[in-house]
Length: 286
Image (cartoon, rainbow, N blue to C red; front, side):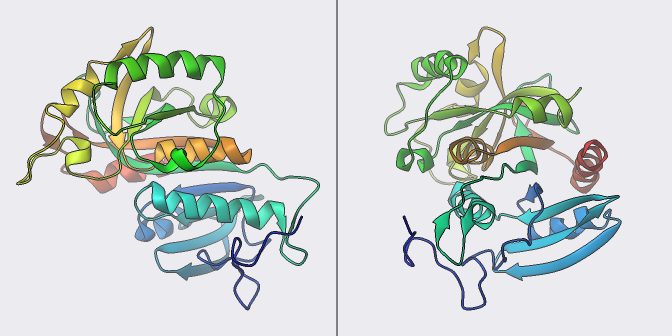
């Protein structure tokens, strides 16, 4: 069955609508970063840069680490952008743009987020590099996709719903990291459940001038326990990355540079240094 022109928009030059990339432009290993300026901070370590492209907040560099081809791509902020990026990345490798049909043989991408985050547990210091074992979404993205949970995900999800069930109009979703990437890229890193919020201020428990509808949101988050699992940090993309990667058949891991302690009300004085450390760790393990 052909995919319609309005469902999958292809630019006149044959590139995908938002990312402005052609099939073949991306490697099977993709590093995603939020900040477009961070793309160059990753690709400066490449042994060779094949090309650079950009449109809106979506900047892409593809090159080589030794003989391994790698793409680094900026997503911008939030799971609404993740919806765009992941569907278009998948289309680039799994849809024939000429026939508009899904390919018979599908490609599985290894997708590694390198992002920033705030810790919600007092024993996780600023400067920690943390791999998300699960992504817990407090946004609405996965209301629009069918998602099948594993047994372990369902057990954990039941405890999450019991803990957060009193909050009105929130339907959380949960997805595990790729076990393979967690054991390779995330090896020896601190681990925990990462909450993905649909905003930066009240949705992450920050108080500036507006009144928050959920009092002591950070306290509610860090008091959650389910067997050995606890929520460790808070950001804006991981859950969407994990959920869409699983729905589309890709592997994903989120590596978080902890820049803030939300319980100690502190923010790092050297955030760029921590992000640089996370980038180097990921590139060494690729």
